[in-house]
Image (tube, rainbow over all chains, first blue to last red):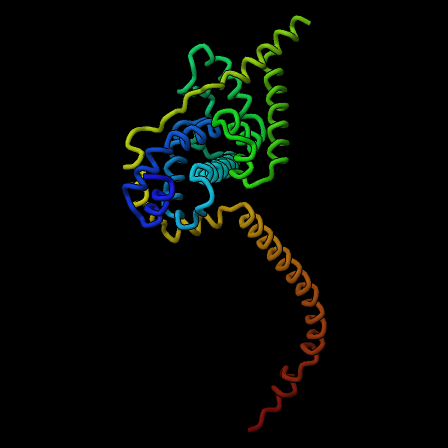
Length: 188
Length: 112
């Protein structure tokens, strides 16, 4: 089944076409979400939400664009929703702490360990992922899409619905910020 | 000098550590879990209301409206409290010169 046939069948609500879409793209979606949110369970949740959204809004898919770009776009939006949800939880936790209530939220101090890393690079990558967590969210997304997922700047601009110069600026700032964070870490 | 060089090497090592990284995979039976979630995704009206109220902009706006109503009530109460004594002052002479009060004359000269 080629790309066009798959889209037509998806738009007709074909279950086997949807199963194929999930099978072919699940690692791509999961990996992107995993690096951005740095939590396996949350990344799994986001992956499910991405495919549900894809299933529900396949009719709005423009035949001229790439299916992978469209899925990346949904993934990025879902990770942004996740961040908003986390911020809401933080605010709620703060308000509850003011009234002396104990929240059940565990403090996540666990060092993120990506399952696809080579053993000898695990230590350096853990430092990089920790630094990645500290830079602004849009820079983190741009860096992940380029460095981990191998997307070109033009594709990132399409995914993030922005212009090429702004992606270049985002990447440049991301690299500077990461270098500063890493430098601070290694000096200590 | 050597220290800076060593730090630069470590930074480049960290930045390049994710090159050729393999993709992670989600937990097994993703498709089954997606279908299960789709079947469960009938959001109730209360969940939608909760989500709407929980938005920071809405929460902040509600708080502002609440504060404005409180200030208005306070101001209105203050102005009505100021007008009350004036009413009392005007009422007092009327009470004092009331013709409804029975006098001794009225009480002593009762008609047979």
